Image (tube, rainbow, N blue to C red; front, top):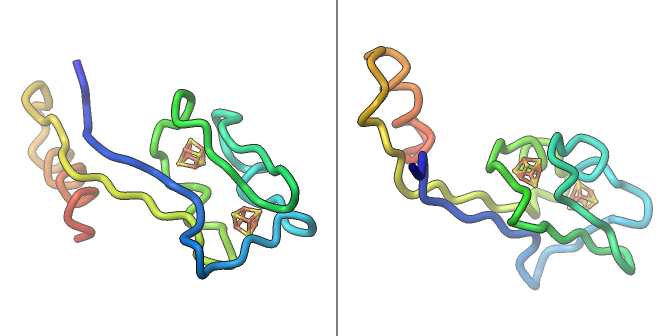
Length: 91
Ligand code: SF4
Ligand code: SF4
């Protein structure tokens, strides 16, 4: 079962990754999904769980996570449903 529909990407063209001196996203990714090559981060989406850590720590605000849909059908807790719904709405 898919729990969410989403995507993650690092850096729009007009943002600058400080990968040579930063490495924060790579150091903190719990899934070892981020590599830094020639000063730029890239995310291997096969391993990414869309946890959001990299987006939160990036000082350049260059990692974009877009959660578009959550599957809540098997979640019985109303408060947990509300919390998870917020991941797609930002509330
Ligand atoms: S969202 Fe989480 S799992 Fe995915 S690349 Fe970022 S830190 Fe790693
Ligand atoms: S945290 Fe941001 S600036 Fe630092 S290496 Fe990762 S993507 Fe680049």
